[in-house]
Image 1 (cartoon, one colour):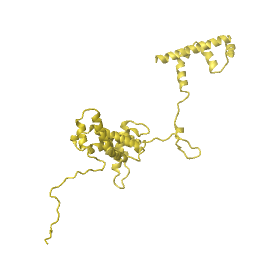
Image 2 (cartoon, one colour; image 1 turned 60 degrees about the horizontal axis):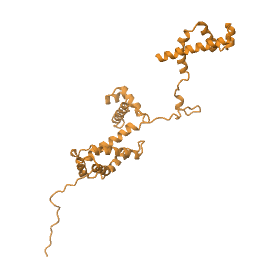
Image 3 (cartoon, rainbow, N blue to C red; image 1 turned 90 degrees about the horizontal axis):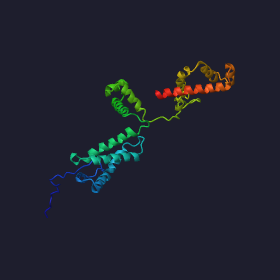
Image 4 (cartoon, one colour; image 1 turned 180 degrees about the vertical axis):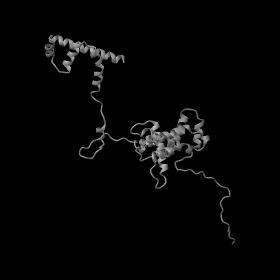
Length: 275
């Protein structure tokens, strides 16, 4: 009985299998092509929602890279989803694969969230950018094992920044979060908190302003009126004692004090309004 000794061989043609980097990268080329030709309306909104839903697992995966950085994973996923929506709206199917466009778009949105929202104390964008440049430069300069901590001059040379800008960036590196005003700064029995080291508005400030405003008006008063005010408010003399000393009635002293005070007050307020 003849025996067939041949073995099965694979087909001579080669089948190209598309490979995706991740399991959460669905094949949505058809949906994007359809989205590109649809006019605004319910049908287009439905296709857009379908695309966002299909790619949402990828957005969640990207958000997971930033966990343990002081923000909840739920909030990070919301930010990543927002980046995904922007990517879907801006993607041009003729320019390549959606994943290649969406990943940097979503990642950038999450990074902007940390840059703009996660500072406990709001700082200018310029300072945030200096912080990032200094952080990257310091990491690059210390990549070699045994490398010394770079100086301000080293960082300035590496980044092209001035030493003053580097110093600002270094300060910002330590300022991502704030210190509670109740934080103890001393551990001894006479310990004090951060709030104890802060100044407060001087309660006498308004008094100083009022006193300076009244000086000119007091100088323009007649000499006797100035003397009466001095005895009453600086020597703490009663109106009756002032009347006895000047040889006039207490009622007259009272009227002079009231008239002088009203005149000085009016002139001071008039100067403030005019200034």
